[in-house]
Length: 143
Ligand SMILES: [Zn+2]
Image (cartoon, rainbow, N blue to C red; front, side):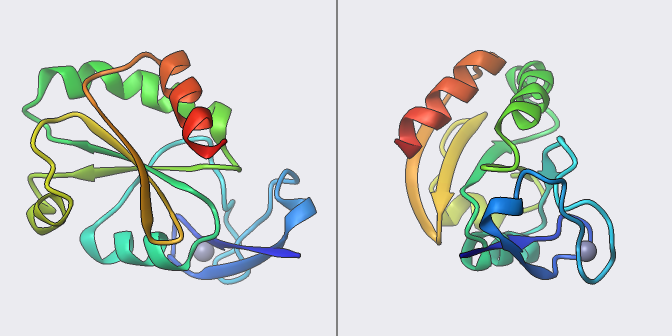
């Protein structure tokens, strides 16, 4: 069994043996770590690749720089990344820059967390959350 993992640095699709996901795998193309313990800022172009080609569930923080609650939640989202990787990929989409994406998913308030797996949205939660709540909520969606 192998798992498709998208490199957060060069967006290459990597095939990682599923039982090696925990062993800090590197990208076959750019040789950097496939998991860094930090959320990945995604452009609209990179988003679709992570959405459609990855076997790792994708947890997206839809945010904007002017949004106070978004800035408050950012450290919690960082902590959640350290806890949920490599079994969940955490990403951030700046809705000011990626307005078409925000419209595609009808993001009405920010921050909004949305969880995707193999192209499909499987959960959504609006409003700021603490790190423990983000981790608990994400695991509950994947159960
Ligand atoms: Zn790479």
